Length: 140
Image (cartoon, rainbow, N blue to C red):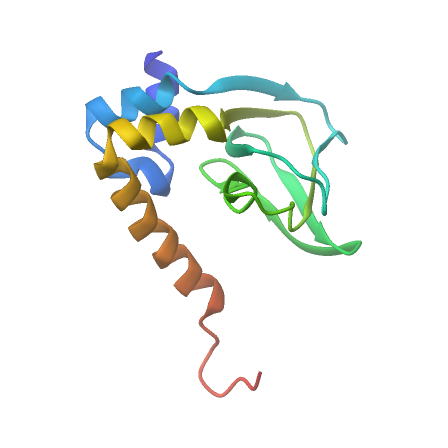
């Protein structure tokens, strides 16, 4: 588990968690290997999983158009964990190692450790601000 703990601690979303809370999350992680070209999630599908990229990278597309990429220390699937459909298709551009967390198990952990929930909400708000802030002078 030491590598898994280090991998999780390297993700901004989990970086400030103490060792006890990080271990609680690590206990939920199922590690998966993804092949080059394999679709991890498909836009519009229901999924109740959260994904953390430990190695490799993937293309992110919305309605068939490239919207970016995810790589090591990044994550995706946070909206799907809340019951929404996948907002994008994520396809591996090279072999990947992912950490996958099931929403039901994650919610059980949050019930017993509410401090983790508060930390994650704070982190996700910061992420949302980064995504939505536009450069000065850019029109909507």
